[in-house]
Amino acid sequence: MTDFYFPMSRKRDRFIPGRYGIERREFLRYVAAVSAIPFLPLQSQEPVVKSPRFAADPFSLGVSSGDPTSDGVVLWTRLAAGPVDISGLPKQPVEVRWEISEDEGFSSIAKKGTVVALPQLGHSVHVEVDGLEPWRWYFYRFHAGDATSPVGRTRTAPRAEMMPEELRFAFTSCQHFETGYFNGYSHMNQEDFDLVVHLGDYIYEYAGRDKLPRKHLGGELHTLDDYRQRYAQYRTDDQLREAHRLFPWLVTWDDHEFDNNYAGLVSEEDGVSPEVFLARRMNAYQAYYEFMPLRRRSFPSGSDMKLYRRCRYGRLANFHVLDTRQYRTDQPNGDHQKPMTGKVFDANTTMLGEDQEHWLMSGLTRSDATWNVLAQQVMMAPLNRGDLELPKYSMDQWPGYEFSRRRLLRFMHERSVPNPVVLTGDIHVNWVNDLQLDFEDPDSPLVGTELVGTSMTSGGNGGNVIKEYERARDQNSFVKWYNSNRGYVSCTLTPSEWITKYQVTPIVDRLGSPMHTAASFRIENGKPGAQKIG
Ligand code: FE
Ligand code: CA
Image 1: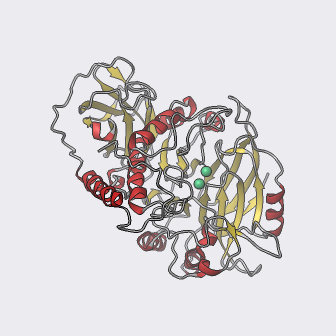
Image 2: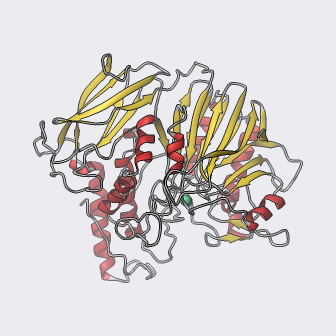
Image 3: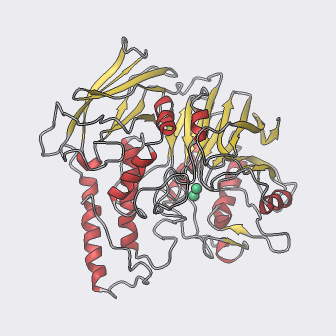
């Protein structure tokens, strides 16, 4: 079941139900596989191996933590026979012990316990610890047999009624392994962050290509083991593993964790039948869950996985983590740059899906946090990338879903949602945008601020002046700044202001390039829009 795979060679055929006998067979296999997942036996029939012996370090994939609350956090690891060996361990459940401590020497253990790493989940371990103290650092580790994991460091969130003096976090996205080294992480790892937010494109699904700084193992990803091996390969990067070890993470995906520019059940390529597509989505989602420090609420159910959720830092910040891929309607007029016409204004289109949109709006209404952070994927400001005669917009981004975008911005304006700040990844360029209620009216009130982060590596070395972006900056009055380097974005939040530094390097095709701050911005509490301060 775990190697569930459909040959993709026929994917250009238009799907017409019943036209091909094979599709019925595929459909039955799909139904069988999808219905099996929710019933993964959490207590396996196989006896649990209590004292496993490993030929090599079983913790080569490292440790990670995430989704902090004021009294707990998720601790993650995954047993493996070797760094990229995803099928080398016997298919038996293995006992893993965990402990979390107030000190690095583990002399003051706060909590400990035992879990079973199941072969059905690739021997991944997700421990949801509770009963911890709010807003404090902890150290954790795992043991399996005689082996002990690296010591991870993590931090709980403040209690709901607390107002911390400061929250520091970094956000990043788009880490195409082949196009470069994760130099941004080596600098991020030197900074003091309470949290790392990842906005997606954690992996890329493409086949390995030659003549790049690194090379993906294998072909384009389809099976569960394909996706697993890709995540394992990304975690061979020392700096990425170290960033997971040092900070708690709050993750969401974009498209490449599965398939470029997909929309719900619709592939980028025409004619992929929905059941073939869903079976592949199931594999992609399961591998994502297996490798990320996520709570049980995000446990995949067949080809669905609920990733939208909140993470609250007292009364200072409320992170509304969004999934703009799984529930969206298909991109109107194809997913490239088009004039904003036709289906863009179809009232039935949706970026978030009805449930998530209601969840977001009700959460924003109730939120009493100073900063309401939307951690999400695609650009919200309608960036005209054509020219003034023929404006064109990316149909894969919020402007392709005008009803959704206008509804959300109007809602935040009318309900006076405190300080909305939208974090965006996806497009491998840094942007800073004012979010206006009505982008066609230059005097329209500002509703919030959008901070778009560049890629960690995707696109390769950056730093060039790009004519198209120069024009886009000049003809879109809401754009405050853009920059085409690589890196991450550092944010320091206090009750009175939000300071953002764009940390960049032009170089990713070799290890160890210097970083610098390309620009800094301040957002004042109660005053939407970013002001450049350096
Ligand atoms: Fe990307
Ligand atoms: Ca993307």
